[in-house]
Each structure stands twice: as C-alpha cells, then as structure tokens.
Amino acid sequence: MNQTTFDFLDSIQVTLNAGGMNTINIVLAFVMFGVALGIKPGMFVEVFRKPKSVILGMCCQLIILPLFTFLLAILLGGNINWSMALGMILVASCPGGNISNFMSSLSKANIELSVSLTAISTALCVLMTPFNFWLYGNLYLKYASISADVPQLVIPLWDVFKTIVILLGIPLCLGILTSHFLPKVAEKLKKPLQWLSIIFFIAMVVLSFWSNRDAFLKCIEYIFLIVLIHNLLALAIGFTTASAFRLPARDRRTLTIETGIQNSGLGLALLLGTSIFSGLPPHGGMLVITAWWGVWHIVSGLTVSSIFLLSERKKKA
Image 1 (cartoon, rainbow, N blue to C red):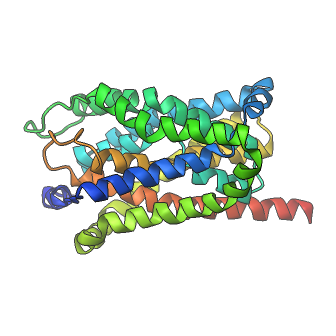
Image 2: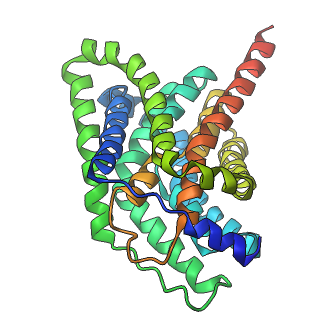
C-alpha cells in the first residue's frame, strides 16, 4: 500500500450521536448478559478439575495472540500503517466473542470449556484488554518504522477500565445471578438470546457504517487480506497449541474457535462509544480493521465449525 491509500483509510470517520453510542453500549451489554446465562458456578469446578485445556486456552487468548499479532504487524511492514496495526492489536486484546459458544456447539466441540473460556477471558479483560493494548500499542509505535509526526500513544488505563466494567462486568454478573437463581428462565432465554446476539452484532456493524457505506466498500479491498491473515493466525494459534499439547479432539476444536473468534464488538464500542481515542490523529484504519473483523470472524467461524462437523460425521460413518 502507498501513503495515499493509508491517508484514505485514516480519513474515514464514523460519527455517532449520543443515541447511537448508547445503542452500541446497550447491545454489547445485552450480548454479554446472554453469554452469562450459560455460566454456572459448577462449570468452573468441573473445568478446573482438569485445568490443562482452560490454562492453554487462556494462554492462547491473553498471551500468545496479542504477542503474535504485534509480531505480525511488524512483519507486515509497509503493507499496513500505524492505525491499521493498532486496530489489529485492539482486536487481539479483546476477549473471546460470545458467538464462539454457538460455533463450538455447532462443531460438536467442548461447549462447557467454550463457555468457561469465554467467561474467564471476559472477566479478565477488565485488566488484560487495556494492558495488552497499552503494552503492544506502545511497543509498535516505538519500534516499527512509522512517520515521525505520529505521536506516541498513551492509553488512559483508568478510562478503559471503567468503560469495560460498565459494558461487561455488570451484565456478566446479572447473567450469572439469573442462571443461578432462575435456572428455568435462563434455560429458556439462552438459545433465543444467542441467535439474537448474532443478529444484533451484525446489525451493529451494518448500522455503524451505513452513513459511510460508500467509503467502507471502497476500502474493503485494502483490509480484506490483512484481516484474513490475522484471523487465520488466530485460528492457527488455537489449533496448533491444542495439538502440540495433545488435547482431546473436542477441546482442540474449542481452542481453535475460541482463539479465532474475538469480541471485536467491544473494540467498536471503545472506538465509537468513548472519547478514549479522541486525542489521536485521524485513525480510520483502526475502525475499518475492527469492524471488518466483526463481520469476517462470523464467516470464518461458521466455515471452521462446518469443517469440524463434517470431519466428526466422517469419523462416525
């Protein structure tokens, strides 16, 4: 890519009024509540009796993926600019996406492990999302070859912390309490809310960019390959790590899906629904990378789940 392309990407702006920002936050909170309905305290006990899979899953999501994303951004060199790299790092710093539970169920993976990994990564993201983004974002700006007029990024850790607590912590606790004290209600709501979450997530991406649809369609050709490579890396990290440590087939599928499905909706909420990034120069590259991840990982997740499902059926045949 050339500088003209980078300038074009960074010039893309999505402005939301207060109602639009509140809608994004409400949708994200709703999605997190739906995820929490599948969480029961007993699940954690069962998973931690044999903690190997959950430990490896957390390592993939919280340590290996952000680190390898940083290295990939460096490796891509002049094919991306600083804002696209930070978009990749932001996505990698987010917890596992809630649709991963549906994908794991579809592929006959270990759904209990999937829900547990989503729950734990979501809970830990209060600390790990701002930390990983702060760490690797600053490392990239410091060590990558970028223009001198791009300022050093300093992430306001406390603002991110407060935002994630409101968007994730409260609905997560409400969902777990509902599952514990009203199990019949939670069971009836779980499946419909799972499908509604997928619909709402897609709708959130579409509505956020509807007013800028022409510019967004023009930039797809530039970001498609970058997100494809990044997502393949995430899927490969989960599958390779699980295979290297000889996890059972169901757990291997779960780690692949959990690492490849990131909660980019959180990234969008942080970018569009807060003032955290307002001090940066034009950074449309972050926006389009994060938004396209939200669309693409649904496609790749369904594809990988279908492959796993067909593989399972062939073994039984």
